[in-house]
Image (cartoon, rainbow, N blue to C red; front, side):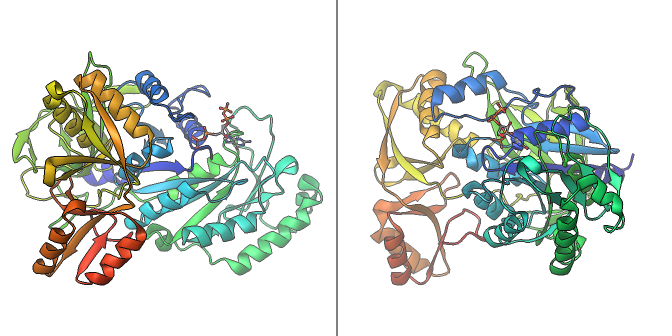
Amino acid sequence: MSLKEEITRRKTFAIISHPDAGKTTLTEKFLLFGGAIQTAGAVKSNKITKTAASDFMDIERQRGISVATSVMGFEYKNMLINLLDTPGHRDFAEDTYRTLTAVDSVILVVDSVKGVEAQTERLMEVCRMRDTPVIIFVNKMDLEGRDPFDILDELEEKLSINVRPFSWPISKGYSFKGVYNLFEKSLNLFDANKTKIADNDIKITDLNDPQLDELVGEDADQLREDVELIEGVYEPLDNNEYLSGNLAPVFFGSAMNNFGVRELLDTFVQLAPFPQGRSTNVRVVEPTEEKFTGFIFKIHANIDPKHRDRIAFLRVCSGTFERNKFFNHVRLQKKVKFANPATFMARAKNVVDEAFPGDVVGLYDTGTFKIGDTLTEGEQMQFQGIPSFSPEIFKELINKDPMKSKQLEKGIQQLTDEGVAQLFIREIGSRKIVGTVGELQFEVIQYRLEHEYGAKCEFVPKNYFKACWITSDNEEKLDEFKRIKSLEIVQDKDNNDVYLAPSQFLLDMERNNFPEIEFHFTSEFKTAEA
Ligand code: G4P
């Protein structure tokens, strides 16, 4: 098969949602359709309900270190689908953001009762940074949720994206009868006791067909009215608008009841983009280029101290990845090759000889990789779009055992390379400030430093509001600012200057005082400004 043929049969995506909206349930249903699992309940939830490190550790230990839990590959309608897993816990949001850099599209799950939630909005902002195409699944239609038109309005308003319903619910909650597919013009009736995957769509090309009244009774007129309104209000689907991330097709259903899931998957397979070109610091790399390129978007460590191995996850961007072939590790300027690269297709973890654009390969790593590292066949370039985001909680790391400072140093470096948290170093006094999205990471770091590196630490909370990456065309002004604010200036992992703003008020004040300086909330400065 030619490289082009390999590319056009691949779709790499992630399912994202606010915790509890139904991501795990939907993932499982997709895998059932793809034949990758045989029974319901096979997909382990990666959700942690309590904010406790011990919970997290238990779950991590059970999940082990495997590609299987991170990439789920399956075949559907002759397509190879790579579904990338994202963490279920809010505190690990940054891990999700990074995974989103490795996909070509996403399916966003929204709870019909709760509507758009905080995490939904943030995830959508990250999608927007790379204009990632989004399909929305409004889940839990079997519950007394909100009015579907209100949900559509809320999606447009809060997520700043145009929407286009693809299917339409017939009533909801206890009286939920099913969905009408607006494009295939077919009716899929709901049976709450349905346990097997059945294809029971009923074609109704004309909504005035009396068969509709027979099938859904008094809800038929409401459906006719709704559909008329939809056709009048919403533009017909323009595929390019979807592909450029401006318009999201919307489906309604119930993942738990396997309802509306097949329509969603069928449309996804039809519409979702193939592996796309990606920007580097020098040029855009097209997937069809003969030479291999790829980048590391995730590092997963085995937290069992007896087996301290790590897997680095590589997204192939162009050409063919080959086992045992030397590639160029751009940051280290080093030749590297891999004897046992792994992928995961239909339940089995395999050593792969070759991988193609869109694929994710697990590479056994002994500490050579950092998140964001690029591999090529020699070209000097760095993939972009894997930014660090400003953390929300900041704490100073204090060594509790002076005899173990080397271990602590090494441990915190490796943990932050893995992306567990961000490490900022303040030159003065060489202080270490750790930044995270949630409290849980601090417990995890403390636990892992102790158990894996034998180092003891404590964290002292710091009252910072945001980490701002600072840049300016005016070197003098930048130096002046850094001098005046020296106590709040730190360096990130790549030695970039970062200002830790104590509050929104003080940040605004500095902006006024130093109009020549730009303050960015991410380490790559495309969007998400303060
Ligand atoms: P998440 O990964 O997004 O966090 O959500 P998950 O799939 O774990 O679903 C969260 C809860 O919502 C689960 O219930 C799940 O069964 C339920 N759920 C998912 N889809 C639907 C649906 O279409 N309708 C209804 N009514 N519920 C749905 P739980 O009680 O937390 O767990 P479980 O014991 O049922 O597994």
